[in-house]
Length: 105
Image (cartoon, rainbow, N blue to C red; front, side, top):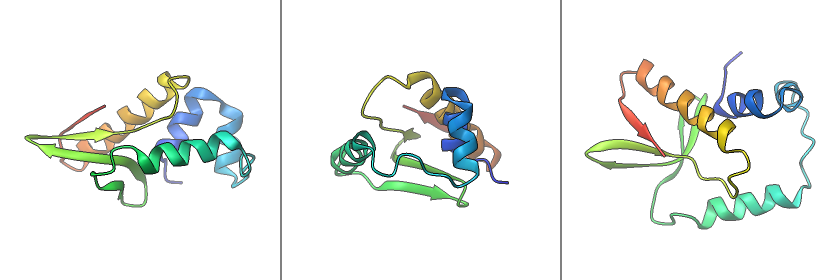
């Protein structure tokens, strides 16, 4: 099983949510906050290339390449700050395994 960044986030935030996700059970399909998060994602940083996917395993919001590579993960709220931080750490670790040095925000 491939471990994704979302799985890392769910592992830190709620192991039950991770189980649902890993078993392809989506409990949030009509959640208004999920839709709000999508809107924030679509409208934030509109000049940047978004949804960068690598190996169908990690997918971060966008990157900037001015000197160093900087990986961004945007959320609508700071409520899940710790889980998202671990998600970003996982992305940086994964990139490092591929020989890519990056920073995260």
